[in-house]
Length: 153
Image (tube, rainbow, N blue to C red; front, top):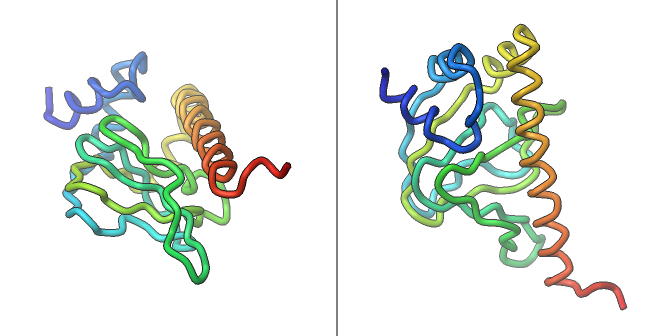
């Protein structure tokens, strides 16, 4: 078993996928290292990839004009980083900054979309899993905004 296949097989996000689907994903994945303080992506840039954090912490930040950015959520080992690649216009909606040194698996968005569209069973599995990520991120954003600005009372 390849190292990438072993890494993907052990990640909660991919748990329960068929071996053939894991093999397809492993063939698309590349491991990258990101130094602490580096921006992995910036709001408004093209969302050309999807990442799964193997180790380290990444802050999802909301840029604030004239102020320091606000951290909406911090993702950790095993968490998915990025879903903006799924839907047009394929632009990032947050900044992602490495809080620590990070090791991640990166997937090219165009290749991942092609796989999703050509294998409907895998596509369904990915969309279901990314849907859960999106709900979690939206809930975290809502809670963070309530912390920052109060509940409107």
